[in-house]
Length: 188
Image 1 (tube, rainbow, N blue to C red):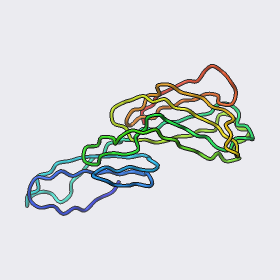
Image 2: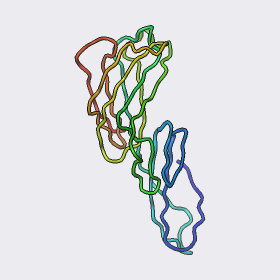
Image 3: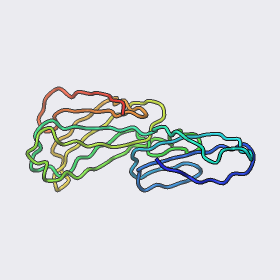
Image 4: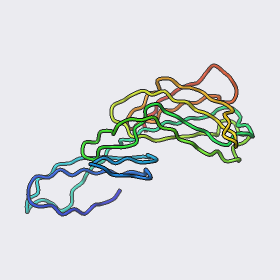
């Protein structure tokens, strides 16, 4: 995965590690917040450093990310330009010292849909990552818009479960009205 070189004085130390594919990170007071969170791992290890301490130490990082995956099962219309996923409660940061999430906020993610999806069925999938501590639920809305940002279809999902190291998957029709939208939760 990688290696980090650290020089430490003799004594007891705690080392915290964060590895993330997120973009637009800012660091403040030990917290890291990403504009666009992605797969993220964290670990904290304590070590007593003596002259006999091995210079190579292994650290196993744990995934602290969660992912919401939306699969559209009906035919994509020619007017579709963008999908917008809005979650009422979303974590985009982590306290690097404790591994806990930073304060939750509403999050809106917009995904431009390439024209190559027009006319396809069951191929359009959108995913967003977040940081997760304790399992929680959030309400989510998915809105399809045209090139003029006018909504052409939407669906609301209530009490969507989010859990660390888990992908929450929803699939169903967005453009045709059918009363079913199925959910599966998969460890990943």
